[in-house]
Length: 256
Length: 271
Image (cartoon, rainbow over all chains, first blue to last red; front, side, top):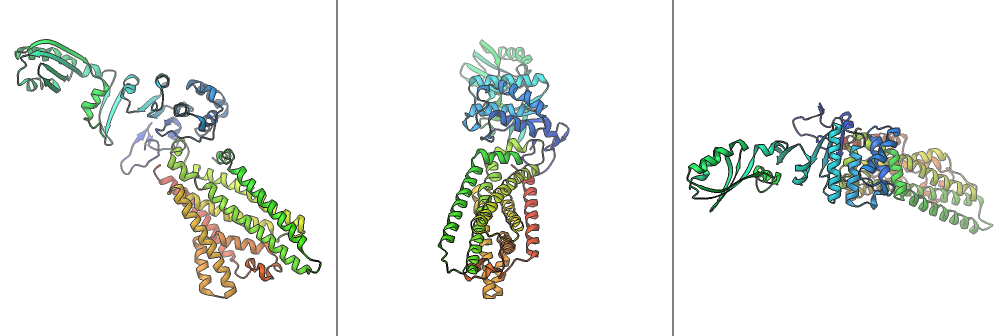
């Protein structure tokens, strides 16, 4: 919808200050679709030239940019082969190059690493970082949470088409902490007592795990446990992975 | 987009295959015509010779017409429908150009290829008959342009249904409509012999729904000499029921409306 492929049934959305789908604004947007399918009878360099021309890039500029991008995505030796001979990973690489051919300000990448090997994924991460450093905003849509964790600054969780919550991944570790406790004589009302500071508590005999709402609350929680008569042998706060955050926010069904 | 459509046809070998098949047809036609002249006996009257050769010219041009319409449908049936189904359109439709430009560009690409194809096939058939039999149709340019117009109607209809239906469904609908036009055209022609107004009405209704065959019959009327049509064996092309200029005007409006609706629908639908 933001790119004009689908029309809103109601309401409105703005992209780069213009209504979504605006034709002129699309000149400032790059897009790699999830089902990346291109004209397979074109060669890699022909495809980039075609998409460059459609984006209004001059032929002189394309003569410079096409070899650069082909080199950047690592398909230089295959640049004169028709795309019908490309593997899924190679198609994804050239798809990424076509999304960058006009040096867009805003880039939508839909599952850009789904067909790539570990080297390819690292390459895509590096390209996304270089685009960020160039000043572009990159929207990375992915179910590979580990990729998002190492690549993105901000994450938005969407369930059934609605934004459930968003997190700044640069600060999320300071906001929420998963804590594992090993203790004897845990009181029966431990869950109720921790409620002001913690969520998702799980008690299993001598083991207690919960999510502290902030790192600052940890001393308070520890004092509360000691005051309740628990004998603490271990109190281990650890960073919450994006996957755990995803499960805690979206529930086990993952928003399906 | 027009250029890319042309290149696609060349790369997928569609263009060359069509031209090769066309060359095969022209060769067969030339051989047939050669043998026909060789089989004339010394006593065959010149008038009968003229009528037979004129009839063969019209049969050749009619075959070119059918071939061109079928080629139009078969080569373009997957263009829009297939790209929507496969998702190839996503990377194109998100580029900074209105959707109607994508569709019109592809349409123009096909229109250009059809112009080349019809020029070669029509020109080839006429040249063969002129070279072997020394005969030429009346108003060949007008006839060729009408056949081209007929193909553009078929092309626009294929694009129209391609914006909403899958390749297979699109092909079934368009070939079905072409069959309707074919049958309608012949019913109207037969009504001229039988002087049956109800039969003519059925034919006219079919031509209103799909006017391609009516355009051909007008082209045939323009090209065939009045004398040639008088021989009973070749009276199928004779001017017993000629589509009026009003029908040709209707076919022109039909083409423009169908193309405009295709452009509009393609711009409106979710991809």
